Image 1 (cartoon, rainbow, N blue to C red):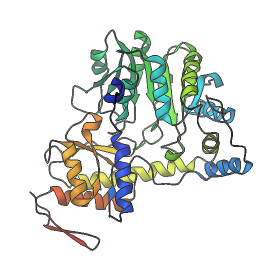
Image 2 (cartoon, rainbow, N blue to C red):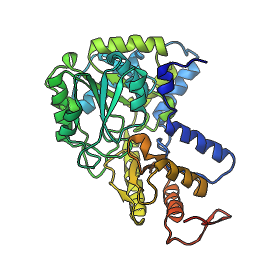
Image 3 (tube, one colour):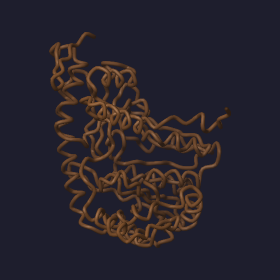
Image 4 (tube, helix red, strand yellow):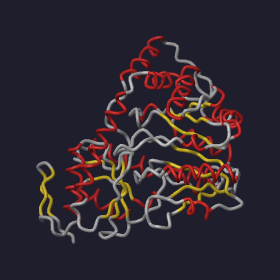
Length: 405
């Protein structure tokens, strides 16, 4: 059987694989704690459910335009004006099957084979493979100072004649780092000066902590949108806790949106009209759920940070936003895959190996679950790793005895 070169180069998504593993273990009745998850546990907004139910009851579940239904475009236009201070036209908007599809279609619209796409490391697991699916070359940029916060000099050093785009995800999955306003302004200026596409993955921009303010990249653009190479990506998955609805969007110049829509039209014919109606309900409805989620996540972050700091030898940068942290466990095990597998095997705690995000020796831990899962999960991890912990641990009625060093 012959498989394409691109097909052979693509790996399974490790985060989706872990979700599947967690579901299988839970179905077996195992007391698994999933600290690798990427979806809030709060329910979808009632306005979204009511809007979807009303459309479902109509029985008119038909094809939708490839770039999104008019009502959703209007809601996205208003969202863009309120959050970015820029009025855009319907022709500047494309709705998609999640922010992930919006990024993928954008890359397919701009990247030629062998062209390069730059993104800071650590990075979301899908960026490298998405670039490879376009025949492009992913170029991760590791900050020279060893932090999770890149400098503009780090980016400039990796730009070459084949550089086509830069992806910025801030606040960042997996580290939770929110890049400085000065850095964002410098990246916008750099991309405009060098005529490089800038993909702003803003999916977490409302989930920020410690009184920080959202950063508006359009504020620093000196070009009107129709002349700009900036592509704004967002969606309802994270802030609205609507991961399973799979609705995202892109905002960009009209010509690019037209090309992206053509591509998406051949891929999926556009997102489900039913789920778009739900997204309209969320965007136009009561917004207090976002702040409730943000406050809950900030509290959960504080609890996880306190528990992690009780470890000897674990180093962690306090997240500025999202619902993840990327903790350095290399003092216990250099291989993040070995460490993650050991924690599943010994204490049934699921984590994501940091190497998948470009950071070996680290684990991505999520604090979007319950406080009980956070505290018990970290307690199990500490018992498994810390030689000074008691020799026995109870998980429910099951007694575990540590027989490894």
